[in-house]
Image (cartoon, rainbow, N blue to C red; front, side):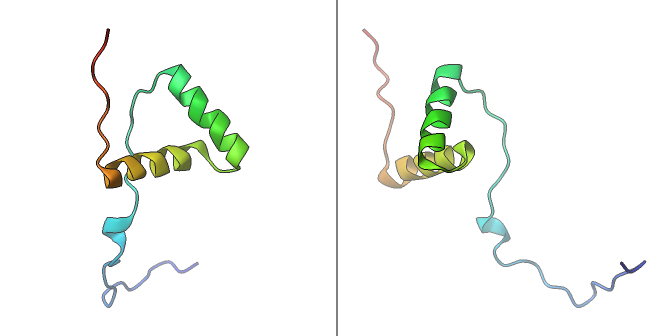
Length: 69
């Protein structure tokens, strides 16, 4: 590994805006358990599954049903 690197000719990553953003959210244990179990069944990480689900909801314009009885 070099002691110094020359980044004077470097360019910004054009795909940087498309990268995922790390956030912290609070999710109840039942919902998290559901996604963890489903992710294990499908063979993919649960965080990726939650991201896919949220992206699908956003693309379809789904809104939560917010009425209680």
